[in-house]
Image (tube, rainbow, N blue to C red; front, side, top):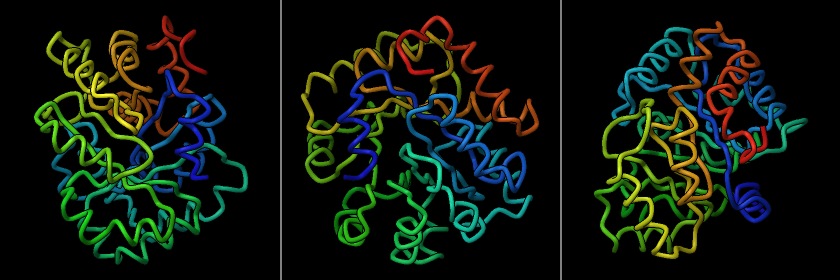
Length: 265
């Protein structure tokens, strides 16, 4: 069974997924960050593929991508860094990147490399659902790679149900149609959106991302989904601690401290 499906089967609530950008703040830190996050109880990791025009990302992740590219990060280097990661890492690993560098690499070659490295799923924010169905779904399934689709408060109920019917793994619920970035809390409109999706009784579990940074936002996300994805806050901390993932995740734990009884860290 794919590790993503296994995770949600075994631990359906209060999951913590962390995003970081490969190659930032240092080119060679990717494997160390992954191992450190797993040792600290993180349930799933999203590894960002840096791109020069990350349209869904806020300033923190844009800056991280720029720095990673300046450091020399590329898909080929990333796959090389991940080659032996499954010797000791057991949690699900997801690559998150834009379509352009993936197509430049070759989509089937990309999926093949994902399988070789033990990558379980891919998030491609600028891949339209119809294009996924027509051109990419069959290839991804051939390599047992889960393509995770995003939904926003503007996504129609019909499209949400289509995504639920034709994808597997989980659905990435974007907390707003804006770009990524930490928020102090979620307003009633966002929480109503979370509940509306929960009440649709979808087949796939959901994870909430964009804006998770503290106990309030983590708890609000988890109350109507399987868990939360933290990106910008961790990327900021990783930069502040000059690539020391242990110190960065320890600080993140402090941010979430009041909610630690809910999660496994």
